[in-house]
Length: 414
Image 1: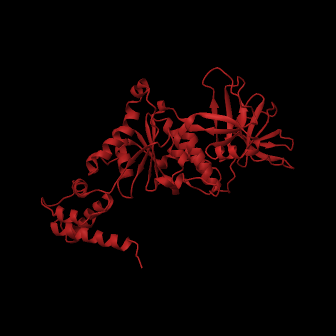
Image 2: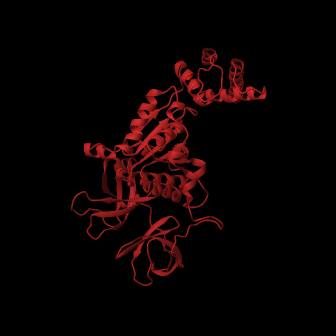
Image 3: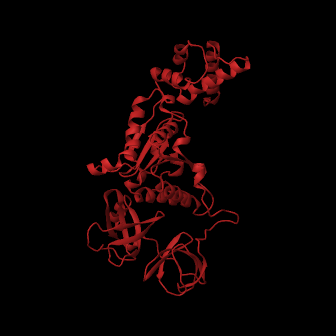
């Protein structure tokens, strides 16, 4: 048994909830939260039966029967009627969700009910009554059941940034374009070649190096709908709300001609799971894994995630078919810093000659965002002097002000 426990720690523990009539597909719930399905690649029936405990290795496409002791013992049936949401309905079996726990009951014809209904369950596990056509969430009064996907979505035509605004990292741009744009615009050719589809790309690097900006620019050129999601926006205190938002975003993206879903600070959305991790976090990671595994390349969706802590991202997301491609954004060197300054100042009214070399030599270790801020400070100085043109003195003083701000933000060592 000890050998099994050691192997199980590398796989995922699951419980079979239902099996199709032909035996070629099973649905299961994961011990870590969420669930999924497995389908036979040929005409043969799958071996696992309803109630079996499984060990899954999604990256290898492998599963096997595991000891039942690996799955938590069943909870005692409620002593009174309970409320549940119908998740799956077959001719002989129904799967219900009772407060985040999936349970199988016998399908009945009366009363009539459907997937997504909120139902009243009797003490002997029978559907007594349909309470609502919609799934009832365990939330406080006043929360909305509707997900506003529009607040995450930007049309490609509404993105103003262009490659001319992104300077100093040509190799990063070229690599990112191939990994993101080609799967969207050349999906048919890649399918004919038989290449493994690219679903997820991880942008790693320090803050302010242009990870979000580059993803937006590529979305514009690929004419892809752009979705941007950050941890604080998606993490809520309502039960099931975060998972519902994720599903809504992916569903909306699937309806577009092509789409890029961008996760900012993915380590806050999908941190490394552990026994001490919060249940909400575990369910959110499991939901994201299921969504990335679930969409087909024909949907023309590419998921891009940014982080400055790649080691903090859940390891399951780094496996093949998920975020298994990485583009590293580094702080610019002297040549790149000059390009960043020149590109970010293209549309700014200024004199022809500015002391770029002086500023470049004093900005070692600066990010592109910090370099760009020099123009904002210089523009304020010119406007305060009632001028519509930036002079060399404005440029140098703007650099000095941003440098002072960086020093104030730097950690103080005692």
